[in-house]
Image (cartoon, rainbow, N blue to C red; front, side):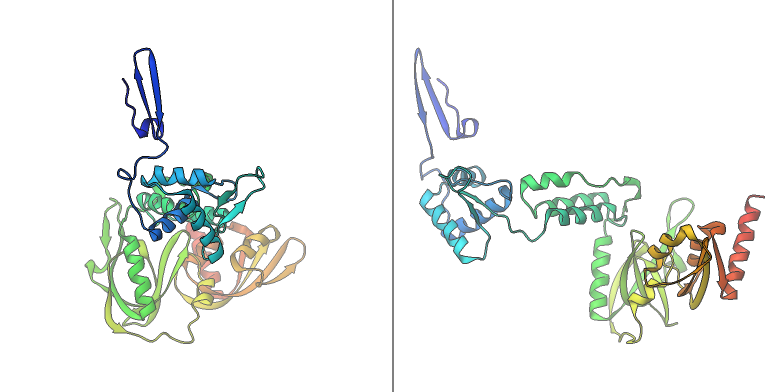
Length: 362
């Protein structure tokens, strides 16, 4: 005699004796063995099942919904009750239920299709999380698994094809998410913060600046630049604008002191003038570029930048920028295809850096 449980034959038991066999199919377990749920619980679980298993391309019949209830929750529900619940959800307009009877003209098929995010939007979120260097590998996988739950199981399979990022560029700091949260809170509440700041040495050991003394800063904004988070704030007591890489900040805490932001400081316009997040003095610059760099210039300065063609092979731009090592290094990227015309202080810095570069190879 074999006695197979519901897990092995989907709620079926087979009894066999000698040459004769009797098959007893149990469509549902008795009420004494199944869980009881309230009407509210049933409605909530019905919505969860539709979210998880249905979408534009996947639908369920009433019978399949009953089967899912048993498979997921070990709960028996009546077909009339589920039909009533589906009708109530449809009429309430609070939860999208799409009914399709055109499939075979007889049976109705139910699905949930109106979701908060389109599949391409979820893919962009996953790619952004995957590419972010400041998010650890473990946290990346955790966030992606949560994003996948924002759509059905079948559509989530389409999200498995994500961009490839080297694991070596991912942060090893598992506490950075708490640092970011602390900074956002301080910015929202206009609270002065304190923190330790440092960087890695040649032995790949993290060393604190200023012997581990705390920095005190008025936090203005968090900026995402070159796949890193930066804090832009006013350093105290010097009241100068500085930038700090968030992954290099430690022991970030908010103080009880509050501050008033400078109403004339525009963080968006300020960041547009930065190069590689280096701070410095703002000045009007004029640069001459070879014609093939026009798209590079538009990518960096935007389509609003003033461009003046000089013949067919070159053009000039005039714009406000922060004079810094970041700007110098960005310009050196383009070699002789870029030439600074003004200001003279920047011309001199480019000349000095070019001479250093030349001597490096001679």
